[in-house]
Image (cartoon, rainbow, N blue to C red):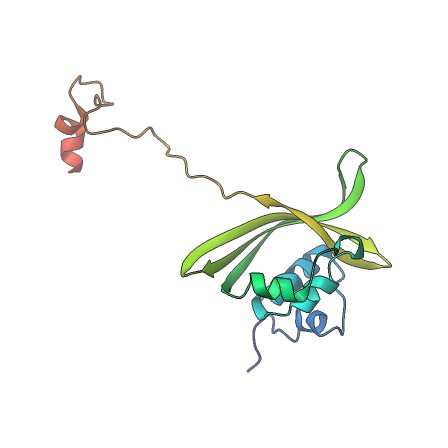
Length: 170
């Protein structure tokens, strides 16, 4: 049985990101490149991460450094978000392809997530990763204000919550 691709496409690694990681193919879209980069992290194929980074943005980047940073990380899954082609970015309106994603991983036994809005640019008919901006997880907001035990009951009775509607909740 063939190994499923870590990117979550549902395809085998050989049908999906494997050819990119092996140097036999180059992704045709920013989404495909993002998926292959996630697979590279998940499989420890750090050379692909360097190779798929835009040549103008590789300074200080090395496979060894990436391997050291990821040695205790266990990648769990990738969720792809919005993908956009040729979007104007910045004051000069330079065109980039944009991909939003959330990657879930475990570090020191604690589940975590990384969200990013990633920017991609073409050079010599190939698409490359340029940079990204972190997406923060959506904070949980209570639909109603929290009522403490000694607060006035929200029903308007004038009693404390613990002696009124809160008594039924206990």
